[in-house]
Length: 77
Image (tube, rainbow, N blue to C red; front, side, top):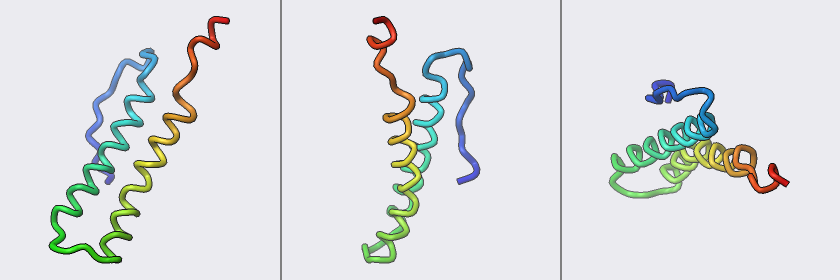
């Protein structure tokens, strides 16, 4: 997945990094969808490969949720 198609945003936009991280996760999910669309039947090997493809997407999503989204009301107290 080295050919990510992510356009650039204004780096001053508050959600620029979140937007890019979500696109990275989306590209990995799309790769998982493409992978299983070529499979005739499911088996342990296919499931393992799909997990390997999707794990980075999950990690990106967890990172966005845990690190990039803040509670704005805390900033104004």
